[in-house]
Amino acid sequence: MRAWIWLKSSSATQVILNVAAIVALIVCCGYVASDYLSGKQQVSQLPTMKPGTLVTLPQSSRGASGGRTAQSSRGASSGRTIVLALQVGCAYCEASVPLYRDLLAAANKTSAYNVVAVFPQAGKGARGFLKARHLNIADVRQADFGTIHIEGTPTVLILDAGSHLVAEWDGRLNESQESDLFQKLALTRIRQPNIPIETTDDSSIPGIRSAELLADLDNSPVVDVRPRGEFSQYHLTAAVNIPLQELEVRAVHELPKDRAVVMYCGTHLACELDKAKEGVSTYCTESLKILRLVGFDNVLLFKDDISKAQEAKLPITWGLLVNETPITRSR
Amino acid sequence: VLHHNLERVIGSVICIFLLEGASAAPPVSQATAPPTGITSEGVVRSKASSMVLPTLGQGDGLALPSVAVCGITLRENGSIVSVSSLDVPSPAVGKAITEAVRQWKFGPLKKDADRDPTLVSATLTFYIVRQRGKMVALNPAETGYVGRWKTTGPKAEKSKGGSKI
Image (cartoon, rainbow over all chains, first blue to last red; front, side, top):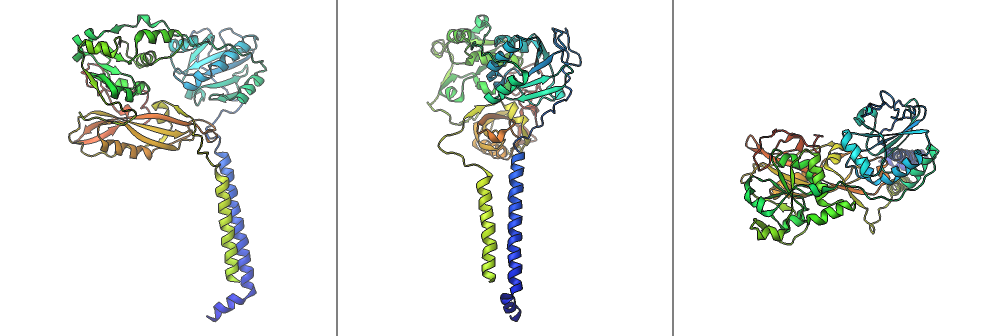
C-alpha cells in the first residue's frame, strides 16, 4: 500500500508515463504509416515485363517470316513491332477494337512499324475474328501466352528492332493510356468510322421443324439456350436448359457430340439472321458460335416458334411467370 | 496523475485508430451502384487461389448425376460480393454449394483492380455425382459426359471452364 502511494506521488512515475504515452504514439503512427504504404503498393499486383525484356514471338502461321524475333511478313525488320495480344471471346478485346482500328490506320501510314496479332486460338479462328472486325493485320500468330509473358488479353506491346520490350499496356485502355500509346509510337491518331461487326451469312445453317423433331424426339438432344427466367415460363419438355453464358463450360458434359444437337433460342430465326447481317450479335448466332467452338459440328436450329411447336403436338412445359427465381429440380 | 497519463495514452491510441480507419478506404457511395460486367467461368476459376468443395449429404431420392450452378459476383480486386444458387437439384445442395463458394479466395481480376469499382458476375458449375454411396460435387474438369442422352463418344472430355481445380 505504501509503495502504491509512493508510486502515485512520485514525479518519476509521471515521467515514465509521459514517455510511455509518447512511445505508444510513435508505435501507432508507425503502424498507420506502414499500413498506408503497403496499401499503395497493392495497387499494382500483377507482374509486368520490364522494358528491355526479350520477347520471343512464335513463328508466323503463314511461315513467311518470324522465327525467334518479331519480324513481320513484310520483312521490315529494321522498324519497331506493335504486338496485339488478343483472344476470341474476350470482351475487353471487343471493346478495344475501335482503338486498334485507329492504331492500324496510323501505323499503315508509315513503314516504321510492323503489326503482329497474337492469339491463343488457331489461325482460322483468329483470322476470322480480325476480318469480322475490319482489323487488317497480315501477320497473325498463335502462341501460348505464358511463354511470352503475357498475363491476359488484350495486351499491346511495342518491341524494338531486336524484339526487346519498349512499352506494354494491359487491358482495355482509358483515354489517357490511349494517348500515351500514340505518343510513345509517335503516331497521330485518326479516328476511324465505327463499322459494325461482319458476320457470315448464316442462311445456310441447317434447321429443323417441329414435325421432324417430333419424329425422332427420343434420340434428339435439345438444348434451350435462353436465360433461366424465360425457360421457366415455357420450354420444349425434351429440352435441357443451358443458358448462353454457361454453354462453353456445360455443353461438352451435358450434350452428346455424336449426333445432331437441336438448339432452341426462342426467337424467330429470320429475325435473328437479319440482325446478324446488320452486325448485331443475337442469342442464336452467339450460341451457335460457342457450340461450334467447343466441338459441336452438327447443330440444328429449331426453326419454329412455340405456337407452331404446340400445333405440331410437340410436348411443351408451361410454367409460372416467375423471373430470376432459383430453379430447384427433382428428377 | 496516473489517471491523467492513462487518459493521454488511451486518447492517443483511439485517435490514431480513428485516423487510420478514415484513411484506409474511401467511403463507397450508396446512391450509385457500381456497374456490373459478366465474365466467363473459366476466367473466374483461373483467378481462384483457394477453393473449398461443398460437403454434401447422402442425397437420397435425388437423380444423379446432376448439375448445380451458382452465381457469383466479385469486385475486380477478387473479393466476393455475393453468391447465390441458380440451378440446383435440391435446396440442401444449393445451400452447401453457396456456403463452400463463399469461402473461395480469388486474386485480382485485372491490374489496378483497387481503383476500379466495377463488379463482375459469373456462374460456377458443379456436377453432383454419387461416389461410394455418397453425394460428391465435382468441378467440370473432373467430370466426363453426364448428359441424359446415350453417347458413344469419349467419356472424360474436359471443358475450358473447369481447368483450374
